[in-house]
Image (cartoon, rainbow, N blue to C red):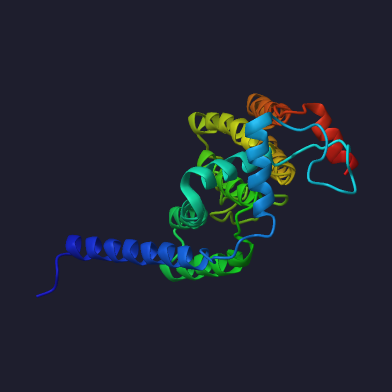
Amino acid sequence: SLPQPQKLFASAAGFDRGVLTAVILASGVALSLNIADPDLWGHVQYGRDALASGLPLTTTYSYIAQGYPWINHEILAELALALSYDYLGAWGLMLIKVGLGMGVIALMIRRAREQKVGLLATAAVSLLVAVCLANHWTLRPQLISYVSFALLLSLLGWCFEGWEGTWQVVFRRPKEPTEETNAPLVYSIDRIKYLWLVPILMIVWTNSHGGFLAGYCVFLAYLGLRGVEVVWRKGWAATGLLERFGMFAAVTGLATLINPYGLDFHLWLLAD
């Protein structure tokens, strides 16, 4: 006798979860390459020095730039590395590294499943990403940029659920409208409110790695293009949503000023 449909669907869902769990674990193996980054010792030591005596105003451990002003744009990451190594040791650092990598892959898989991507495509792309990241997935501040960028994209996708995946700008209406050209502008104000988490993410990112600048540009581009879509579809009625987007962009930009150097940090970036 054939199995009941409910049991068949339940077993299929369980099979999918099992495969994707195996993919996440396999990704962890790929991202666990046990090679210490050449700069790891420096990041740990700089973090220890900052914990012991605060941020130095000039370079340390330098024999060609003594007394040169030093803006440490990775201080939060270095504090985390120092504390992790001192309290958890090398094993702890490896577990943190692997855990962060598996978390990024899990975010990708979750988003792919939400968008109804097939099991084979999801597994293949996730493993490909893990293998390609392996040589770059070392214990250094760049990891914060990878993780923060993945969190930013996941948050944007969740906040604009229903809007993403639809084409809202149509220059010439076809005689016979298709599903794409008739797609409604669907969004949830309650979800969009969670974009206030982006400034918090940006504070951590700004104090951990200079890649925050790329993340902020992506955020601005995303909101800007969503703004174009909503104006195209709603005209003057889009004013309220545009004001929200502007507030999110402005507050996120101001959040990057929350660092030990304030505006001097941005001026240093510009000069660099």
